Picture 1: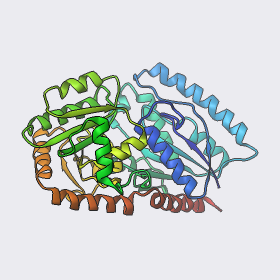
Picture 2: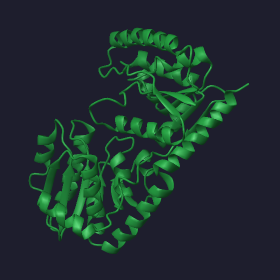
Picture 3: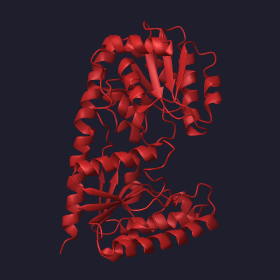
Picture 4: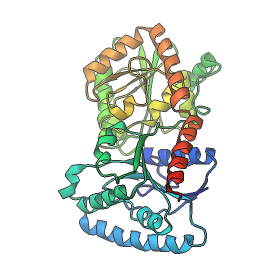
Length: 377
């Protein structure tokens, strides 16, 4: 079956890395592994980041024209269903509802959220459009449990909503076969003392929530400077100077810059512990990738992040801005190598059982096939 795939916020071909782009690409991989033929329906972006009603209305007009173009283009060979990834008030779907209504095919949404305060806010036009799209959906799949309740009341009778585990390619992120050798190599490359506990993170360095998370980490590490650790923060971005400044007096901190995927995988495989507070974050791919590499995690206590881990078994959780709590957790894990080793095993088991891309592909196929079957006469 051919599936039309659309990401209104950021197309999967976008040149700037982000969680949205990663998730879109992973979903496409899952669908292809499930045996579907994927057609990128459009690269039209409906995102208005400023809350400008006039801009939202212009995007609606452009979206209507794009939907009409797609309907004409697809008339002779329409897809079997349509999947829209990431639907919310800043990036409504002006295409999927029109196309699916025309061809009588299922409309599936992955990751929808409803921010009720926007009903009368600066994104009210986009909010209303996202609600109308939700009302048209036959199936909504949610990687973030926090979004389930807000979306449920807007679904039409007979529509289904289900949680979908976030996928990860475990062949790319895996424990090292020869960890001592890998660790020695990276220690030389990045000038990291081998005999310390390597605490790692990998995240963009942007203003706002990302910078807030880095500042929480800096404060946490500042509370345990007497312990034997090295903190390695892989990433880059417009707020890098602010990030580096936050760690200026925090002991042994290394900034290797933005790393390629395979280099991040190697860093995770050689490290001892993953740390990321996730301030105001829905879920974090690095948390999942670190666990796939066999790293225990110290992360924020948010529903989407908790869904990626086994709390208390593969990860310790604290409130995202609780620097004191994170410091205590770091100290406990730094001092307990046996516990880290046990958590590392649990982390890998969790990912292989629940998040491996092949497992998620099977789950996704079952859900898509089910809604497809329910629409047949």
